[in-house]
Every structure is written in C-alpha cells, then in structure tokens.
Amino acid sequence: MSVQNLPRFRRPYGIFLRIRFLNGLQYRAAALGGLVTQFFWGGLTICLYAAFYRSDAAAFPMTFPQLVNYIWLQQAFLALFFVWQNDNEIFDCISSGQVAYELCRPWDLYGMWFARNAAHRLSSAALRCVPVLLVAALLPAPYGLTAPASWQAFLCGLLSGVLGFLVVVAFVMLLYIATFYTLSPLGLRIAVSALSEFLSGGLIPLPFLPDGVRQVVNLLPFASMQNAPFLIYSGSVTGPAILSTMALQCFWLGILFLVGRLLMRRTLRRVVVQGG
Amino acid sequence: MFKLYGKFFAIHLRSQMQYKTSFILTVLGQCLTSFGAFLSIYFLFARFHQVEGFVFQEVLLCHAVVLLSFSLAEIVFRGFDTFAGIISRGEFDRFLLEPRSPMFRTLCTRMEFSRLGRLAEAGIVMAYALSTGVVVWNWAKAGVLLLMIVCGTLLFAGLFTVYASFCFFSIQGLEFMNIFTDGGREFGQYPFTVYGRRILRFFTYIIPLACVQYYPLLYLLDRAPSPWYALIPLGALLFLVPSTLFWRLGVRHYKSSGS
Image 1 (tube, each protein chain N blue to C red):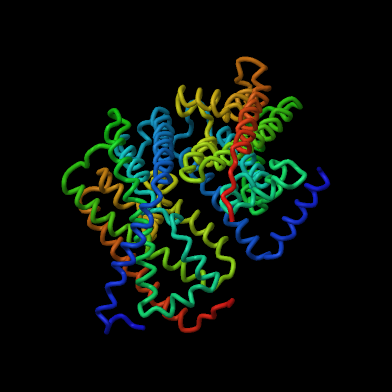
Image 2: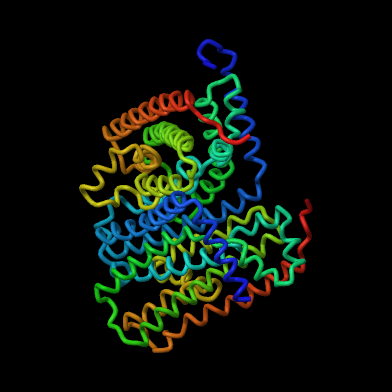
C-alpha cells in the first residue's frame, strides 16, 4: 500500500482535490447565505472593538485599521483556518466502519484524507473569499480592508497563510486519527474545536491577551494557524519577527505532519472495523 | 398534552443517558465552548476595564442571561433547529397525519440535554456576577431577572421557529439565520448599545433581543430612566406572533419531498 514506489499513484490526490472542489462549488445558495452571515459577523465584531477602542485607545495592542484587516481576513478565509470547518464525511466513515473500503484502495490514507480535507476547505473558501474581500475593501475608511503595509508584507502574509492552512489540516488529521480510538468522538471534537478556536485567535486576536499568557500561547501550534498570516499581512508583525513567526510555523507543520503519519501507521496496523 | 410531552422528555433523557461517557464528554465540550466566550470577555476587560459605561461584572450578567436563555431554548426547542433534516427525509408527512399539532410534534422530536454544559457555565458565571454585588437586590429585581431569562428563552424559541419555517420553502442557504440565532448568542453577550445606535434599534424593533438584555439590565443596575424598563422583556414576546404565523404559512405551503 505504500506510495513511494508507485509514482503513478500520486495522481489520485490531484483528482481527489478536483472532485471535492467541484462538489463544493455546487452549493451556491449555501455560499450566498454564508456570505451574508460573514458580513454581519465581521461588521458587528468591528463595532464591538470600536467601542473598546473608544473606551481606551492607548490599551489597543495594534492600530484600529490593523484590527479591521484582521477581522475581514478572518471572515474571508473562515473555511481555511477554523478547525471546526471540517468535512464530516470522514468522521462518519470512521465511526460507521466504511473506512474498511478506504483501506482497500491502493494509496496512502494519510495523503488521501489530507487532500480531501484541504480540498473541502479550499472549495468553500474559494467561493466566499472573493466577495467578502471585495466588499470589505470598498467600505469607508476605518472600517474597510486596506492594502498591506508593503509588498513584502503581502508576500510574507501569503506564504504564511499557506503554511497556516497546512498546519490546520495537519492538526485535523490528528483528530481523524483520534476518532479511531473513541466511539464517541463528538465530545472530543467539540472540546478540541473550542480550545483551538480560542488559542488560535479565533475569538479574540492573540495580541489582546495579557502579558504572560500571550507569550506562552504564541508558542503553541494554534498560533501558527490564522494568527500568523493575518498579523503579518496587517503589519502588526514586522521585520525579523516575520521570519521567526514563519520558522515556528514550519516547525509545527513538520511536527504535526510527522506525528500524524506515525500515529496513522500505528493505528492502521491494528484497526478493528466494526459493523458489517 | 403535558403528559405526552413528559413521556417524550423521559424517552429522550433515557436515550441520551445510554452512552454516559459520550454524554459527559459532550457536556464538557459544550461547557468549554462557553468558557471560551467568558475568557474573551475576561481578557478584554483586563485590558480595557469598561465599555460604553459597563464594567466587567455587568457585562458578565448580560453574558449569563443570554447564554442561559439560549441553552434552555436549545434543550427544549432543538427539534426546530434540526428541522431541515425532518423535511428532507420526508418525516413531516407523518407529523401531519398524527392527531397532535405539527408544532407540538416537532417540539417533541429532539431535546438536546448535552447543552446542560452551557447552562452550567452560564449559571456559574451568573452566580459569580451576582455575588460581586453589582446589583442591589429587592424582590422586583429578582422577578425581572427571571423574566429576562424566560422571555429570552421564548424569543430564541421564536427564532428557531422562523428558521424551521424557512425550511418549508427551501433548505438551502439558510445559513443567514445563524446571524440571529448563533449571532444573537455571541453578540448578545454585550449589551447591544455597545454596537451603536442603529444596531441597537435593529435588535429592539426587528429582532427584539435587546429587550431581554440591555433595557432590563439598566433597570437591574438602577440606571433605567423609567421603572417601566422592568417590563420591556415582555415586549420581546410580541416576536412570537409573526413567527407563529410564518410557521402556519409554511405548513400550508408544504409539499412533501417524497421517499
């Protein structure tokens, strides 16, 4: 079942990506509904921070336009960076025993699921990000999305975004693997989603955390998800800090990837498929 | 009818208790979700101390009232929240043939006891907020607090009903309703005045969520310009009129999806 010595079997990942992508594009009405929700959500969040800004501007850890950029990027790329935005079919297939069929296929399960999850996220983000970014850019001055500080910030933000996205998918792979071990994965999934949402800066941007807490949270893999690219793009992380942030992202991506592969191999060696 | 409801209640409770570990884990997960919201408020106030004249404990009271209402509504009225499935599987046909009203029947399809986790979190936060003495108590205020929670629960139930009624017309693209249900829960944790005048007006006259938090909260904190603010939560119940009518319209419009 190994892929390494069968180069022609690498192609299925690309095909998988394409199928999932086209599949996701079918739900256009859902995308429209999601779009409206994201505008409202982003708008109200910005109103909330504006109120905090009015109450004490000096305590704001970044400039107001930087925060606005953070919020709009978050809404535009929701599907890429939030751990709970998953393809639930894979969870169902593990708990229902369907996974037996997946195991019969002649390619590597880790790679296949990685591609599936990535494709699921990319297809829903592709539909949503463009209109959100466009309209957010057209909003009046302090409330709209603005251009990045420099083209370097843009490029680094983009690269860091790709890394962050891969970190998210590699992390979700661990959740998939955990599903093999528990027959009640829902509780675990809810708990992990809640935890990662907070620690990745999904509820409040990480610079808003108090000293002491912030430094620790910044080192966790969760900070390498949405936090890194959004802060780099908006210009609140600059200079050499950009490099160290991206190095940390690479580190966590490597660790999560290796651990995921290792655990997957160990798990599949003694998986018991139930049902029939 | 109450007896029948009691039976359904017992069945759902028993069935969800069959998988105890799973149940407990889900409850803990839910609790953690609300705890994240609490932590966000905590950290923001550690930095800013007050927002629009409200301090930490006052906002916590708002957070607790809205979360209590939302989770109570989710426990009892979850059937409406998962109504899209009932429509797409064609199960609603059966409801129409049964002797009870379809609304009652939908009410009985699901009860989500795992939301007790959220309820617990909200209860603890409320106990803490009240223990700090932000509210100077008397009987009237205790009544108003209860009124806020009851009316809030019914208002969220009304919102779930509107969501379910949309399912009669289309089950796609309904994500926008999340603005009012999940959005109400998330953004309702701060008094709506924080978001500005226009948003406050929207959440007073269109979706009357501010009626169960901002206005009566002013009364609890002795800042209300008139004692009538105590009764504003009742105004939120007016929302149940259009939501019930919309449900009726949906039932009349219903065409089976087959199968």
